[in-house]
Length: 214
Ligand code: GAR
Image (cartoon, rainbow, N blue to C red):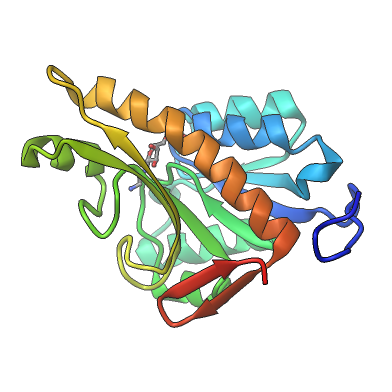
């Protein structure tokens, strides 16, 4: 398999992805469904969660991917927990750290440790509706179009350079679950496509402007 830039891709040269997830893990499932194809160019090598009951753990187990639980309650304070997450991630030697429904904010020290290599998927068209309730906040505001964003993580909450976005309509009568499901369907496709392209083509960042491929 040749990339547009002429690099051969095989399973051993695939980019190593470590996925952080707190919930059901449908975005993780989409990455796992893509990663066996050597042409995809990236492979999930580890899953880290902050929630012992996260569905993401079952998905990792079923796919034969090692996982780690780093729960806040097992640490003295937030700084120690952040360090625990960083250590769990580092064990898997990631090329890219993918936050796919990870519902906690990581400290600047964590961001610095994996600087420029942390991606997040968010269920709104950033910079609108950042934070933990992107779907609810968009509905409450009455927007007719919302969507999802894949972006690089910086020190802020959902403020890093934007890599890709997809628009999703809000329907009359939508509530948070119906709208979130419509967004998640677009989000899975966007995340898989964006991560694969970054792995195969590289990522170039100049200030707020990120370009995939040359
Ligand atoms: C996704 O919609 C993701 O964008 C969102 O959680 C969902 C996780 O779904 N993340 C955030 O809201 C982060 N602020 P999943 O567990 O089915 O992948």
